[in-house]
Length: 420
Ligand SMILES: Cc1cc2nc3c(=O)[nH]c(=O)nc-3n(C[C@H](O)[C@H](O)[C@H](O)COP(=O)(O)OP(=O)(O)OC[C@H]3O[C@@H](n4cnc5c(N)ncnc54)[C@H](O)[C@@H]3O)c2cc1C
Image 1 (tube, rainbow, N blue to C red):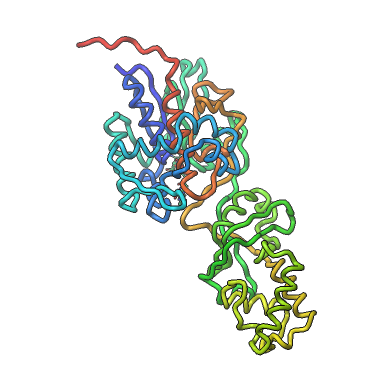
Image 2: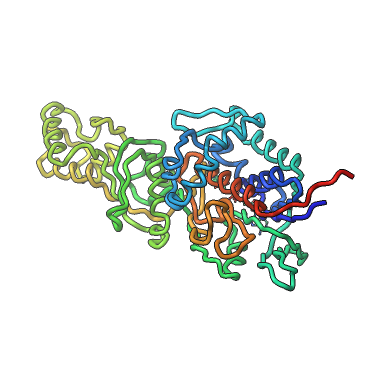
């Protein structure tokens, strides 16, 4: 007989991992998984552009945690107990062959998420998880005398489910956060993280598809928010690893600016201004007969160089020999500090997360249990944890889901099973 009932809310990566781990660890428990959509694991399906960047090959927990702008300190312990290596073992032992790219991102060998989805669904079924789709959980209420000390989970059709434990893995759904707020759990306002910047300036015209490596980018209003890395121009503005990282680190600040700010770019951070000026004077001698706008220098792609020259207000047909010191200084200024007005954000199609959610003070990171409401556990994006791109966000879902599933009934003494 099943003596304990556990309800997991949310059939995403975290909810599935929590439900499977719980059902496998405590076969005597009745584990329900409620998912509001018709399909489960929707984000896993589309993750990594459909290739499913399941985790990262870095193993050291502190190193992995350093890729989380929110949750770094809190995740070191959990990643020690269930880290990237454990995720890889979990999936490979169940038949999902994986490989790591040079940049440490780990993908299924099939390069599609199908096998990952099938494996999770199959594991849940084998472990006896009772999955109900198209089932919205409206609210959860802590145990009371009226409910015989059980948690009350109210479904959209007003059905009430009484249970011993609840694992909340509803991702960034406002409904669950509202329900949690009502019982007094602190929720940090959600804002997007991992997005690219929209630019409505002539500077980016015709630059879509052009990338440039190792530039310094900085948000004008927040001098300390800077980043060195690669950028990529798109049809609507600018993206690339450095931009996505900056969008994540500055998620809350950029939301306050309503995504309207000045971005400063230093195209040649390794050249101090003085050296750059000397270099340009040298070019004036070496390339004297060449047109300044068309000569490709410092490996800067031609179209981008032309825009930089234009931004420096240098006449387009001028030859190097005709460049005045004023022109050279103007070029130095733009190369070291191109100012571009950002007018909005665009979601990154390959990976997108929310910054915000259950405040981390509310959680015991050994067990993922609420510090104030025993019997309530959290896993995945419902928490105020989010990582940079590279498989870190799914890893956070696997880690917290696994720990919640393991801990959820650890203090329960189950009656001895008797043979019938
Ligand atoms: C386009 C895209 C690509 C991504 N690519 C990657 C990647 O390559 N690598 C990576 O690491 N991360 C990636 N991520 C992020 C990663 O997918 C998420 O961080 C992770 O899936 C979060 O898992 P979760 O289970 O916590 O939340 P979710 O996946 O959001 O799952 C929560 C589930 O709860 C359900 N739910 C919500 N409210 C209720 C309710 N009231 N009742 C019942 N059910 C409810 C939702 O329908 C949902 O199915 C990507 C995200 C997106 C959007």
